[in-house]
Each structure stands twice: as C-alpha cells, then as structure tokens.
Amino acid sequence: MRTSALPVPAQPRLTAAAIGRAATLALHDELSLSPKPGLVTLTDRGSHEDMDAHTFMRSLFSLRRYFAQIAEAGFGGAGFAVLERCGIAAEARMLAATGGVNTHRGAIFMLGLLCAAAGATLSEGGGALHPDRLRDALRRHWGDALAERSRRPPTLPGGIAARRHGLRSASEEAALAFPVLFETALPALTTGVARGLTLREARVDTLFRVMAVLDDSNLAHRGGLAGLHHARNAARGFLDRGGIARPEGLREAQAIADDFVARRLSPGGAADTLAAACWIVRVCPGA
Picture: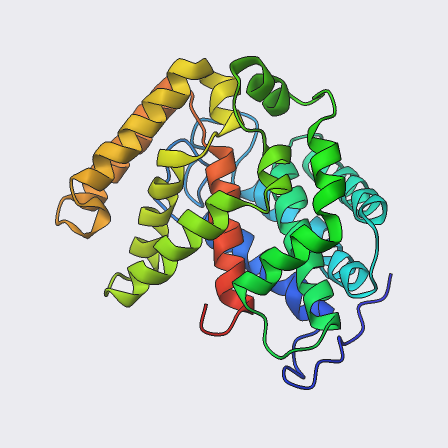
C-alpha cells in the first residue's frame, strides 16, 4: 500500500509516512524511558527473560511501514476488516523479526487504530488533528466493528486473563475509544509538562497514573488479580506521595521497578497506553 501525502491544506507536511514515523518514535519514547516497573528499557530486561532493547529495536524497524500503511487505509475509508488484515500482517513481520517474541502486539492494535483514525480525520478536512477528533473518528468509523470484536471469545493470554477475572479487555477498551488513553494518560502527560516537569518526569508520572486505573490484562495474566492489585496500589501510593517531582521520586520509582521484577510483573498495557499518549502529542499540535 502506498504512503502518499494526505492532502490536507492546513497541515501540508502531515503525510501517512509522517503519522507512521510518529508512531515508531512514540514506541521508542516508551522503550527509552526509565525507570519503568517490570518493563524493558534500553539498559535492562525488566521482568522479561525472552526480550531486551535489541529485540524491541528489531521489532520497531519491522513495523515502520505498517503504521504508515494503516494511516493511508484510514484516509481511504477502509473498513475494520482491512485494518485487521494490516494488523495481522504486521504481527507476522514482528514475530519474524524477533524470532517469535511478542514485543508489540498490543501496540500494533492500539497505535494502528489511532494511525487509521488520524488518516480518517484528515480525509474529512477541518484543519489540524486534535485528540477529540481522533476519538470521534474511532467511534464513527469502527466503533460498531470494535464492539463486535470485543465480544469474540478471547484467544490470547491477556484476553483470556481479562475474561477470567472480569476485567475490561484491550478489545473492550478500544470499543470505548480508549478512555484511559484520552481521559487519564494524555491529560497527565500534557499537564505534567505544563507544570514544569521534564519530559522524562512527565512520562514516568503518566505511566504510573495509567497503572493506577487500567485493567492491565498483562498484569492479570502474569500475576492474577493479586498482581494487578499490587501494581495498582504501588502506583497509587507513589502518586499520593507526590510522584516523580519529589527529590526522592526517581529513587522510589526505581524501587518499585525492582519490586515488579522480583514479582515478575510487567504492565504491558500501561506501556502501550503511554506510547499512544506520546504519539498523540507528536501529531496533534497543542494537544
């Protein structure tokens, strides 16, 4: 599929390629952030024995064209079945690049939908991208299909864990147009920077704010409800004590990261949500 310019007079430089590049950069934003409880960073494996930063970088390179392709599909008015086929093909490329390791399955789904929504929004004109317009496009173009998809019997570990424990799955979160992303993560990231946090500090605080509220099926898969509740309580306690802005904030965040590794917990859903927030900031002027 081509990645030609999306003809939007108000944003002449915003092309499908630019939307896709922003997605790849946002995933690198997430990878390069530390400390992150239980998650892979540039310097450690977190709670994962089968992957490291090199695995993630191979995965990122394999996905670069996908995000641009799905943005172009959204611009062209593609139905959900087309987006789903793009995602399945991207997942196959990811697994080939990583030797079968799932590094970005959640991001393929979440960021892929957002890139498609960006394309659909720009096809409708109206000037610059805005988070509200992205969310509206998700609902209007694919909301019914996403709701139907969320009712399918789960086949992947995270979805099975979510169904078992009565949690809101990633598919259900998408069917609701990603409420945790738009109502928790994005406001946390933008207000954190506005109140003087560094970008790194704002991203760490945002990750913890997402962990505190998200039904993270990866946590439930790895640690059951006890693991999910432990992660939520750790995040809420960290934020209640002032978060990353305190002199001891960075040290406490690292201590929580070490605790998650000891417990083999990894909030993969929160990581995907953070990356999605980083992507919105990159493509939405003034978000």
